[in-house]
Amino acid sequence: MGIDYSRFISSKAASIRASEIRELLKLTQKRRIISLAGGLPDPRLFPREEIAEAARQVALELGEKALQYSPSRGVPEFIDAVKRFLQRHGVAVRGWDDVIATVGSQEALYLVAKTLIDPGDYVVVEAPSYLGALNAFRHYDARFLTVPLDENGMVTDELERVLRRARAEGLRVKLVYTVPTCHNPAGSTMPDDRRKHLLELAEEYDLLVVEDDPYSFITFEEMRYTPLKTLDRSGRVIYTSTVSKIMAPGLRIGWILAHDELISRFELVRQAVDLHAPTLNQYVVARLLDSGAVERRFDALRSVYREKRDAMLEALEEHMPEGSRWTRPIGGLFVWVWLPEDINARKLLERAIERGVAFVPGDAFYATGGGHNTMRLNFSYPSVDEIREGVRRIGEAIADLRGGRR
Image (cartoon, rainbow, N blue to C red; front, side, top):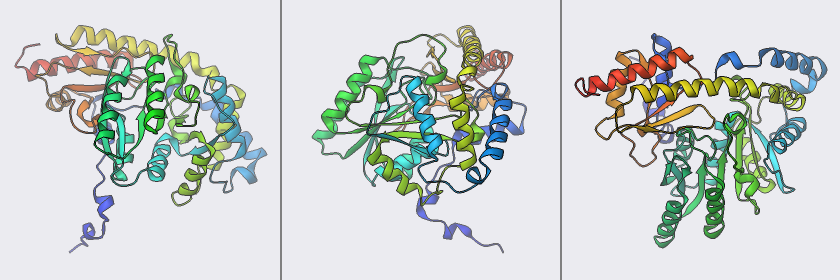
């Protein structure tokens, strides 16, 4: 008889839910299924030659340093390169700010949660919100207050009402988490009037704001907006980002930009997690950021993703039933779809998989329930033909679900 390992598992570990997106990715790898589910970049856009050359240079010139342990905050060359890169792209780096290197932006969110959240603290999130952030906050027993979003991102008038009620009820609200630019999963982008209102509310209610920003560097439509970190004048914004979408996710390098006092806390916490981000990769990324190799690829990224987004929007117009609506993202990797109320996206997924296409049901992204008739569609990874065919099959699956009625 084998060992019953379940009795050794901590209650905290036992409470962790499997990522629905990761589970769907496993499914699509085993079968011939068109995946509109994951958030994978198009691998044709990975700068393989530039990464290989930078890695060769780093290994030969900085071998002893690049292959050694590094400071928990990150190697100085990486920290400085990130600051220069952000400043070139309109993200303010103030005198009180510093950077910590992270293992992708997911570790950044984990460090934020581990450092700031006590059991029972409330975190304000959008409905829907990024699943990875929800899981990080859940791991530290956060409670959630949700604010709806529309095609222009978080509805900050509703945020004001939520915060007013929370104060009246004596709830301990710690921070607001948002993806204001090219939202994951919704694809929306928040205009500056809402961004300013959000920061005014953070001041009034004494909150921190986590600005998760993986996508703004590859927007492919013109829209004037200002990063929350740049609008912030008092050090309330914790800014996270990553090279996963602009270079390659396999590098596993991201960062947090925040007030040095917070960065020092994150640094202490991460010493009990993984000591530091990969030293070699930090040096490689620093070279690529400073050389301009990253920016030189932006036009190609924007062109490819614009074409794929347009193909998805055209296919949705053709194949989605009356009463459906969807976002029209200016960048990022996703389109968010609201289906008619009579359609349950989880039941639809079962029919869609039978037809050889997968997507993520939207209710997974709602912290406190909702979204039964929504779905997230990814356009970055599949080809244009797969996008068109995948959406067509989803339309057929909807007809199946409705007994042949579109």
